[in-house]
Image 1 (cartoon, rainbow, N blue to C red):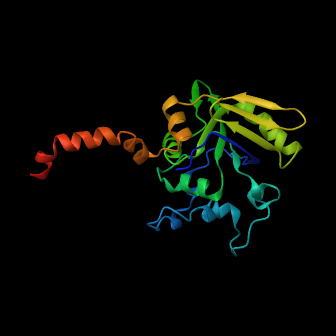
Image 2 (cartoon, helix red, strand yellow; image 1 turned 180 degrees about the horizontal axis):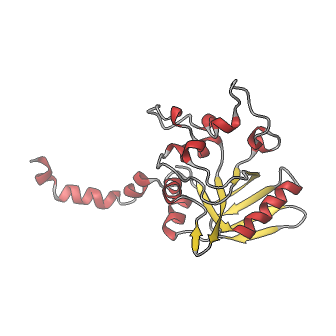
Image 3 (cartoon, rainbow, N blue to C red; image 1 turned 90 degrees about the vertical axis):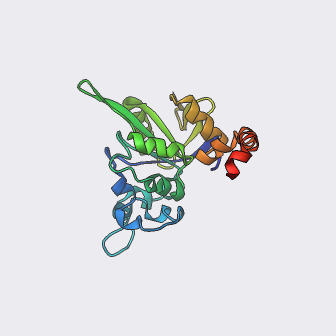
Amino acid sequence: MEAFKTHRGILATLDRANVDTDAIIPKQFLKSIERTGFGKQLFFDWRFLPDGKPNPEFILNQEPFQQATILVARNNFGCGSSREHAVWAVHQYGFKAVLAPWKMHGHTRIPAFADIFRNNSSKNGLLTVELSEPEIEQIFAAVRHKPGIEATLDLGKQSVTVHGENILSFRFEIDPAVKGRIMKGLDDIGITLEHEDAIRAFENKHKTQLKK
């Protein structure tokens, strides 16, 4: 897994809430037993017309957003089923991070990301950044004003900086354990191997029992 510390890239805005995993990676593409090649199927039903041609109305098919590496969406991104393929598709397409807002609906707090999608993201090196709804609105407005605008994500400082005529800067919260594993580029296997010496010592101590 690639380590993530800082990244600067073009912002692409997806003006939709409750984007579910079936929209992110439709079910017909889940047959592969490999963990690669899913980027080309990202948002397939939105990116392509029934005849297979790119949909010119979809933002990721438009310049300069075809080069975007930071996706900005609405709340509850990644809801639906628990398929890890959704995270693979977003990451393998070329996005390094997804930004989304939390919002209040009455007394209910609607999260920026569905829990399983957020957890799967942390295990695959895709940074999910939760900001407030007004902050995300400012980013949407900045992209509308200047398509192709870039932002810098600094995981160490937990900051988002949008570069434009007026610099926008926001701070985000992240679980320290998640922050650490993403900055080090550690998936579940990598985290286990951090304890390789202890594991080897245990095996050597109990090798007689293990051979029985």
